[in-house]
Length: 454
Image 1 (cartoon, rainbow, N blue to C red):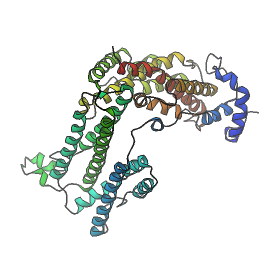
Image 2: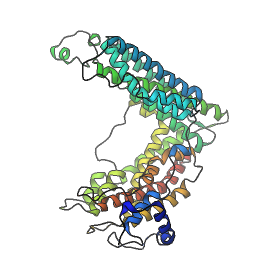
Image 3: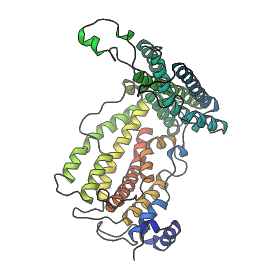
Image 4: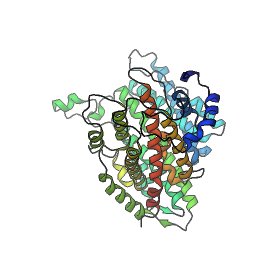
């Protein structure tokens, strides 16, 4: 009798794997999903949950957050919460259904202070920034209710934030390095904060926001004098507060990096530009998401494992045929971030090619054996250990994030219903492990191309 998955304990799984690991270590010798692997599905279903997975990428490397850095963010949140509460106390009850649910930070301020007291500065910064979304919305809403905010003020503040972010970006050039594999990882993280600050600053009000009647009627009155909708004021205020924290983070990381560089450096801008151009030129060689679906799926009456697998691979790895613009104008200046983003895009496309070649699904399959998922996860973990190891370079860490997430979620979930049959749960876990491994294999040469494109 095959045991029910819910009755399989971790001890049972590990004991069973102890006897059957040899059959899975080198891969299961089967042609397709219709052929059974060495262990029954309930055992391998559970084993996908217990099998080791990589740690979070931030545990491998991330720029350190100092106490002063974290404390500044926590104090910003505290000041925002305090002003919000004062204003809401003055307003009293508001019957409008759009009023904020909370006038505080949803508990994030207390959590941030606790992390700060414990010396966990990374967590304190994260919690403070997250809390600013809630506290900022409440504050902006209250200011608008009191007629204490206007468009010009918001736009001026956004312009200052944009200038601040651009100043950091401009100051990074020509990307001086002493150890490119280390320093370029820092540049990518700094530019990531710059990009976030710039994108949040862009969430400002157009000149005619909330004043469509003036524009339609030809009224030339100053739209900036019109009152700002409270919900819009809340959204923009929260975006600006979070963007200002991101700009501060970019400045702090830049200062730490430049202190470590010293005076004996070599510029890396040309190498980054060369690598980015090569990556971009290689992208059109691969099919689009739509092309891959048309080739492998097409117009079918059934949607079985074969169609599901190729649809997922195309969705996860390939780009759309429609052009997608960069999020903000400042992206053009973020050369390190853009180069790594292009390398990730190229790795995804190469991973699609590899995953299709290795796929163990056949067009007429109607089921999927989760032994394949466990075997794929074992191979992926082995690849992770050989490619990433315990002390990867910061540059590689900035590339592998999504691949690591793929391995972390490669677990067989709960299914059995009409909309989520078990073969689908098992196949999805297999595909995550398959794609994650293929991405990891693609990154070392792409990393090397960034370090030395000659």
